[in-house]
Image (tube, rainbow, N blue to C red; front, side, top):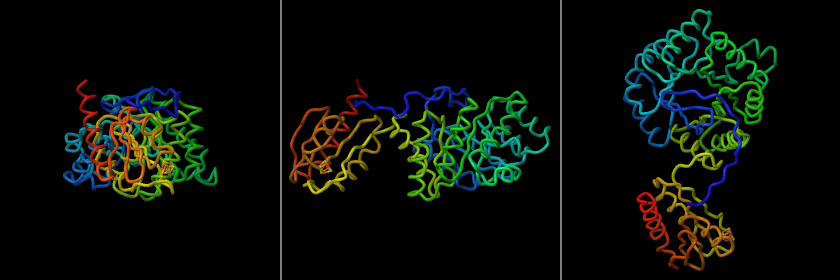
Length: 364
Ligand code: SF4
């Protein structure tokens, strides 16, 4: 298959922990997470969304646990969830204990927000008993008042100071089974915060741009922010936060990892932007090929190019490719021209060749 380069040959070495069966940090593949936006108390709806997320490639799923009723749904959710389930809890240590009894694989809770020391100790003891890690999730929108006063606003330094405070609590309790996120809603602050923290601790980093916006704007913001961190070698697991269907978060998360050359999943598409030299109707052709081949299991590179300027080069480099001419196209397979076809036959021919190539590679 075509060679895929990585933007980040040297990843920052972090400790490794287990979120259920999924390793996070310590050189493990960067995982894609998402969070349900269903009412956690509605088990059927939440399980349906979890199934859709997992089908899209979600490797760790989080649910909000705002009250005891939501916590009561967790045993059924854990049973029905094919990937590790994380309970997202704020303030209430009893909900954390309930979630642990239910069998969640990870808690997202900030120890500094739980209250009395004995409450934190009780949660940590229950986590220790079940080997459940804790994600410290610092968020620019919910920073401690004292830090806001000290720093004037939720600056990168304030986010880092908050994280270090929560980390210290767990270290004092001798429980380093933790990962950390430091999310702000803008890219420069988030980058600065992760970079500062990464210089001070070696805990796995859960990266994300929080409240990044709608699917269109949030995708771009997340790609810039997470892409920069990943290219720095930072980040052990990621969540894209979009105001939209969480399945889109998973698709975007995978696309970011694929673009950074860090993970492979399904096909890699290459297509040109078209220009005045293009003499075939390339845009619908590229869209059709992408849609029809989205289910490929192997990371085949598929190029759909408009003309002879860059077309033959890209098509030859790819596993399969089309280089357009005047109402026709050359079909390439693994560097060789297979045939010249009229435009109307290009999509069918390319799709058939891609499916055949995948079958052959899987059978080999
Ligand atoms: Fe234009 Fe050809 Fe380049 Fe496509 S491959 S952008 S048609 S020059």
